[in-house]
Image (cartoon, rainbow, N blue to C red; front, side, top):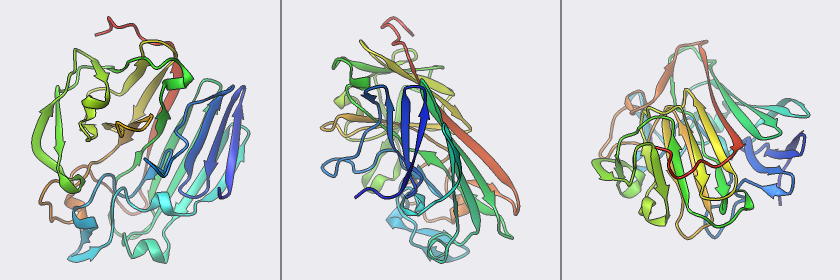
Length: 297
């Protein structure tokens, strides 16, 4: 049974956000659903918020000051009950603060604000992170939305990603346990255009660490496309399960643990550090646009 949620409206657009995890659970424009609804047979989430780590941790653990904490894949925010902290027709804000249970996994005091704004042709999600404790706090943040395929209910036509800038033609090999290997594998990137099919993923996500692009277009050969913009989310991740009709386009600040990593959480690659009382923000925006033709490079 679905838990409590808040609904937003903007013109013909509708969105629904669950208080559990502040997770976007539905995004429809007119009669067209764009967001993956979740399916236990493949992936039972829709658009989880990732905090205070992104990606896998080695053995599902993190180390702080010589102590070990059970901090696993993508952290704990997606499992927590957020507080609804204000809403209007097209915007809602959700807040999570530390609890005794989170302190057992992540020994820091914090406030995480998640604000959704809906537009007639898209939506944005902003993340505000505050260190409310009295010592430095490491963290990473990410947004992990999945989109239904065929995109926008259109024809089942080939998909591609067109980056704003030319990216590396290799990506890290993801080792067993979701850890980042020092090895890299080639991808079929042609200029700024990356064709997407089940073989492109080879059962692994594509992680563009510290990408040059601050935006991209997910475009089918026919039908409507999606434009993504990332503000201070420098790692772009593409992920799908080849047998399932969805594709995730994600923005992260960090990355998973490297193979063999045994360092402190402050040493985990990609982690940010906030001083006591310091705050920072990150944003991801998606809009429906016209498809790009196959000559874009």
